[in-house]
Image 1 (tube, helix red, strand yellow):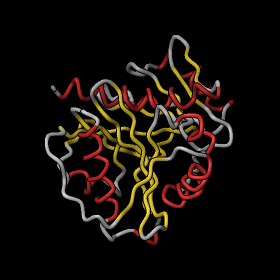
Image 2 (spheres, helix red, strand yellow):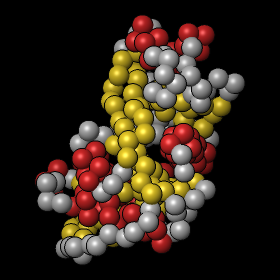
Image 3 (cartoon, helix red, strand yellow):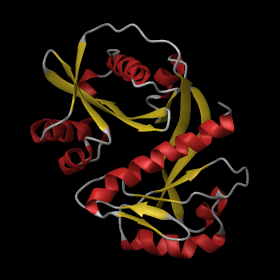
Image 4 (cartoon, rainbow, N blue to C red):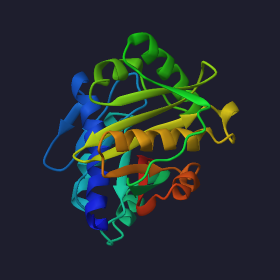
Length: 243
């Protein structure tokens, strides 16, 4: 698959995930310019996105909505080579976080150390454990209701060491590709190789699901692990908030 196709697939997987989880809550909305999802009592996804390059004409409506619904984040895909992010900078938007969109062709399985156990979330009890654990790794909440309403469409996994939950991840399939999201390990269990082991399990599972490519959006903290596993950079995502 060409890079331009992988770029489109990466954005499509991410935005379809947001749309999917927001729909059961009637929280997904779309107009001629942008789409957004804001779920009450949850720190995620709460995104407003636009599937074309941003122009000055788009910003008044976007800014008004983001001021109305506090907590919305605007991701800007740096793929158009127009420096349109400079428009956002000039209109009072501030970069909250940056990520790197990445892809890996799935052609061989990884060897696991078998120190960790993995359980797909399928009931309210496990959804609560997952939801309680997630903020320790990421600093924001994904409500258990999101898991309860979406566990058929999104695979949420709870990761444990000696029966103690220590981490999370999600899989979301679009066409023949799988997005790997929310890979997190609680702070006291970091730097022990567990995040890499989680990724290897998730990649092996993706191969079992007949996916051609794995897609993700890496934070600065996780990027080295993904590069080590063979992921290639596609583009940068700057996540903007209203200053």
